[in-house]
Image: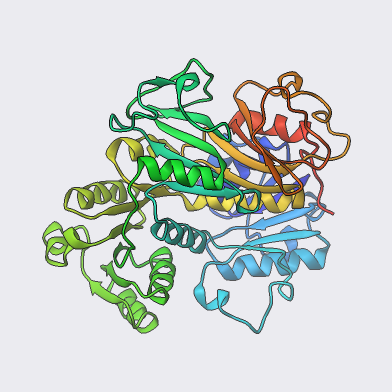
Length: 451
């Protein structure tokens, strides 16, 4: 597919990486000269320097015949104008990053009127994911699949978990409707076999029936009290969206923000939150504001290093749950090692949204794990695909791939080697990143053109 991306910041580059892996014919438009030079060095695609919202660039031959345009500059207005102009020129589908809450709450002008097929808001998506984690009863990150009947959960194993610790997978006393699909160890990802041993410190990924996952997690993790008091370090867009949602749920929210003008804005927009115009990295201040009694501490500043360090310090000072925003994938292994409860990556969430949109209804969901070494995809098996009619052990699936569940109608199957895939089955597949395109192709999903 011919695709044009306007804006080569963090989000733009992440999407570009994924689309190049998918085999897209890619054009990147960026007006910053230094950024463009870096893109030309790192990416095998056509690069155009200039303002991607202008009709001159959008109507050029290299751009006008694109089937999809993705506008992810730092300006909401530029992104909207680019999409409107692209639709007038004849580009079939458009995606725009729109982050300003004023635009997102505008009910008068629809995205259709603006010529936008998909609006992405990385900060809002990250805030909602953090909110979901804070409201989960168990201290385990879970992802729902198959209309909620299947869940993926990750558990960091310690010596006090005899069900998993120091045992081979084949010797574990776990239900047949549950699979350990991966082990994360020292920053690497292992797709395990029966002889593999789970060690203390490993993070294991469990996939299976939702009720079984909940029972297993309840066995190894104590149920947490409801979150009532939350501290948020950083009053940017993620902090705002999160505070707004938590306040509507009746929680007590404190937001630390150093910029006085931004504090005034937050105070006006969030009358139920307590806004502190102060340096949230001041440990004495955190102690004075009662961090030892807070249920959750969330740090969403623009610096990964600061977020990880302060989340760790908050944990040591008594905060019951700590969450950090992390943009750089190289820091992912530190999350497990430092003891941070959860790390959120807005750009990975956004990349997943865009890929789902591109592939239409046949790719039902996609989770890009934080360390980017593995993905979980949910998809329909298309008529005529290569995998139909073969037992799984003869399906030709690449190493590093596990079909975790098959949903056939309303029935959820945890497959064995002799199970046969049928047309229109709904699969949840755990795979190392380099295998994803192969799996999609085998199931008839890869290479989909927008209709």
